[in-house]
Length: 245
Ligand code: 13P
Image 1 (cartoon, rainbow, N blue to C red):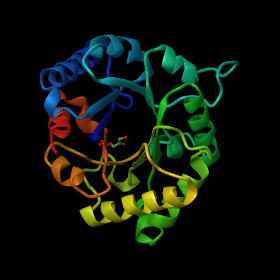
Image 2 (cartoon, rainbow, N blue to C red; image 1 turned 30 degrees about the vertical axis):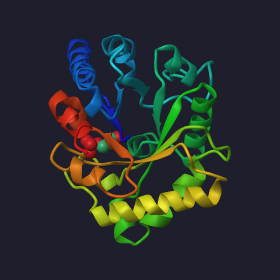
Image 3 (cartoon, rainbow, N blue to C red; image 1 turned 180 degrees about the vertical axis):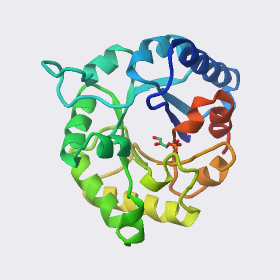
Image 4 (cartoon, rainbow, N blue to C red; image 1 turned 180 degrees about the horizontal axis):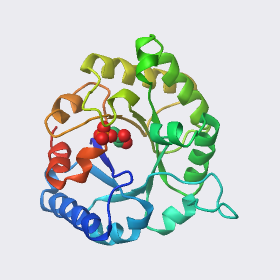
């Protein structure tokens, strides 16, 4: 079953966030047969309120980041057990906005993935090349390098890799179906080489997924779902993505 994850990024104040979450929850609840596995990842400040709004609907809650440590003197950080305690079962890690804007290295992402798994969260580990890397013919190598550095050696029971080409995020540009198919096959073959088996892994595509292109993207072989930014902030459009395939 395709997995659709809404990454709200740094958007949403109380009333709006709760009404968005409630609207998504109501749609999922009213049409369970059409429904994909749906996760929403609001900012930390809204986790508990959004968690209450989606309770019992089948929609799951995720964080957008976590610290590599469990607790301690790390001002401003939020740990994986804290996310779990706030009702999360998922966490997005290694998003390109964190890799670029907060200088997160592969090693740091890996430490976060290990912390999240130890806390019992399902990790959505993000990888993706920049435009310069793609134009330089290095997209496949860059993504393999990110996977090598960011994923722990021990394979978890359930895990998600999200391929998000940096140049497609928030730009309205999407990778072509052929490029998505090729990258998803590349990711799977990398994982097959590295791990004894890769059951339980889902590979998502992210980057300008909208209501009107979701059907095509979700139909590409090797695409198990979508990681959605801007379009997850509108209940109708997010629902169109959830029901696209
Ligand atoms: P957009 O869907 O806004 O391009 O964002 C994609 C993304 O970064 C999801 O994590």
